[in-house]
Image (cartoon, rainbow, N blue to C red; front, side, top):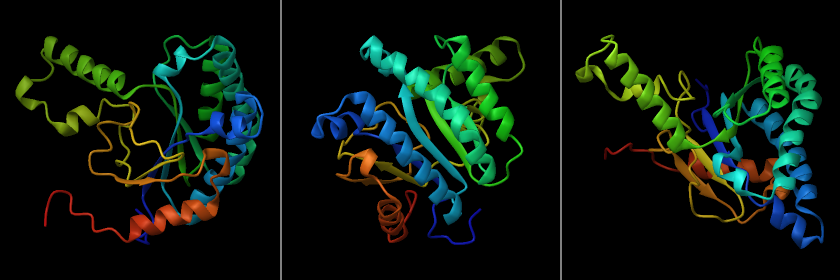
Length: 236
């Protein structure tokens, strides 16, 4: 837990606007994604220095498979490149890398990169950096319910024992606190199937800034906004 209560324990980010950033500059969407990775490095470093315990970013959703094949292929390659290039930086900054999402449909080379990144950083004790990749919250909840249903069918638990804690233990985020703050760039006003269960009482911060232009200064603005709010969790 953070000693400074004004610093969110867990920040979630929907990194939106890479394509629009590129289009405004007459560049390809690929160029926007590359610049977005540069921004991500800065934000990971900033969160670590600020004392944030968990950072979860939405990198590739289960719906993103609908994008043009060329772009999907690039994003898969970008993930592999990211792990290869950034793991030394993560280790240097005491960051533990984890991937949240389904592994179905991902190529072996992508899975190996994900496993390698997690293995190499597993002993880091600072920021836990979650990349939601091939992630969909409805799928996550379905998987949790299915796992619990199997326990019931085997007689290992009674249906009356099913509660929120049990469900959370079978989510991809098991063992992590819910996000305190959600940041979404490029002024989009929707959750896009991201952490639907976990965001029940999260504070939202929406900004016009496109993700490649998001900076540490913008991060601090979001945190300042969070710190000024009275979180009642349904109480008075």
